[in-house]
Amino acid sequence: MGYKVVVAGATGNVGREMLNILAEREFPVDEIVALASRRSLGTEVSFGDKTLKTRDLDTFDFTGWDIALFAVGSEPTKIYAPRAAAAGCVVIDNSSLYRYDPDVPLVVPEVNAAAVDGYRKKNIIANPNCSTAQMVVALKPLHDRARIKRVVVSTYQSVSGAGKEGMDELWDQTKAVYNPTDDRAPKTFTKQIAFNVIPHIDVFLDSGETKEEWKMVAETKKIIDPKIKVTATCVRVPVFVGHSEAINIEFEDFLDADEARDILREAPGVMVIDKREDGGYITPVECVGDFATFISRIRQDSTIDNGLNLWCVSDNLRKGAALNAVQIAETLGNRCLKKG
Image (tube, rainbow, N blue to C red; front, side, top):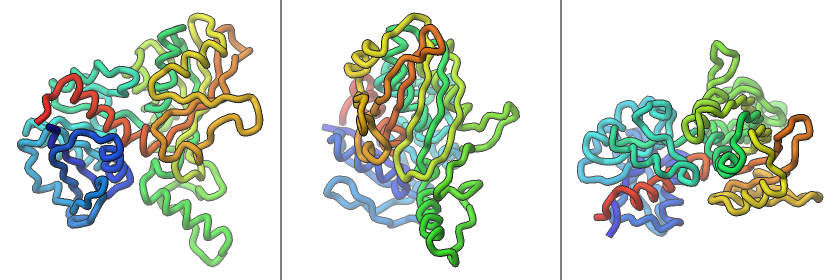
């Protein structure tokens, strides 16, 4: 016995990854449907050894379906998520629409699994921002031991975070560098991304932050502890898949780097690769396709009394989006829903 599962936005990068991960993790599925917009109607997508033809999100009846994984962006979600929720189907939403709603739990299962129980207020659970998801997996076990006061994080975010268009733009611009007759004017990004880095993700706010930076602050507080102070600088880099973060942490109590390393080795969802030698760390290329959040370069910060630095890398299409959504579904099933 299993669940009747909907994947909305099944033709996009994240939607396809959701289908892959549901199959890989052998999520208990009795029936599954792939939904897309009308322009993608009939597109074939893979689910394990099966091929699914997409159906129309606009006309789909969610009645009788158990769980819907949404990867369609905020505007369509605003229309279709309440429709699904009202029909009794629990929505796990990957957009930013519901993340800051006090009646919608924002969940990273390794960090705050019990928050899933709050889904009943609106029948919706929010998936956090990709850069936040991997960071809080690293922070939570350390916070439990020494209480985090402040986090300073700089991100190195891959172009897949901007969707297929971002990946295509990096590919096209890279080719154009070697063929000057090709057009390499930026379309998805504000400046050339090939052989460049751009300190700008999402829109600018009045504070001078970008919205991506604000998300990391607000979401970390909601998921772990509202008392934690967070400041972020989010940067787009010419990497296809895999987000990296340089994280500086100030604690209330002293935490030795060796003890932090041991804590993280035992933490759920974390893989520590930290050898103080050439290549003794993880880079984005090596994390692609993996479920783990990788931690390297753990060391004391000598400029403050209780500080640590670390390097955090994860596949943003997996832990940052699709994997976390499937893990939420698994947690929801284990804690709240009955199969069949």
